[in-house]
Length: 260
Ligand SMILES: NC(=O)c1ccc[n+]([C@@H]2O[C@H](COP(=O)([O-])OP(=O)(O)OC[C@H]3O[C@@H](n4cnc5c(N)ncnc54)[C@H](O)[C@@H]3O)[C@@H](O)[C@H]2O)c1
Image (cartoon, rainbow, N blue to C red; front, side, top):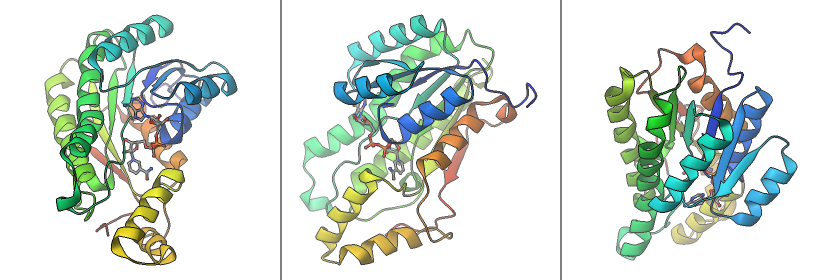
């Protein structure tokens, strides 16, 4: 690997890195030689991730609470001795329900974690990213961030917002050498998507196997994607190989044209 593609020694902060896509991304960055700091709201999952992944550092923080984000960014840049990459991964599934059944607090908590959380982490990380010569931000969106998704209006609205946020930052920060891209995974096989599928089968009154097949067939590849597929795209987007890629919505969905 030449220095156009190497991610060696990148200083990386990943939010919600104690499980799911965030943890797999942390592991892939560690394998590449990067220094990685994670946060998570779940203390037990965080301790377990740190104990089982040598070199991984982190602290408890809720990305939707401004005071905790401020402390997180300070702790991360201190532990890493700088900051090159922010991966705004934290996001919740939010309610799976028809519009009339969604409570305001469910909508607000979805927007607060999925959108406000990215805003806060970016706001406090930018002063440190500005000092890096290989700075970039990856915002986690979703296939539901460029397609409509019935029964998932709160989540879809939050992930479309991430695209507007990303494109605005790409222009606002580009000339300062900070790139910003969004990653849009399709259905990622794992416990989270299995829970969404089960809830959807219930509200649509359909057999679980049928809804599972519908999810697999959303992709032109006829299968869900893996957390490693998403992590690989994040590593590429933050590498020097992607030095001219900015403001993009990078889909990792096997080509998905509609969500059911
Ligand atoms: N899993 C999928 O199919 C899929 C598809 C597209 C996009 N995404 C997006 O990818 C990201 C990660 O998804 P996942 O499936 O790995 O998630 P997950 O549900 O497995 O959760 C990952 C971690 O997020 C942490 N977390 C939750 N709220 C938090 C908060 N406020 N602050 C800090 N940490 C918090 C949880 O404790 C957990 O450890 C999310 O933004 C999600 O919307 C997921």
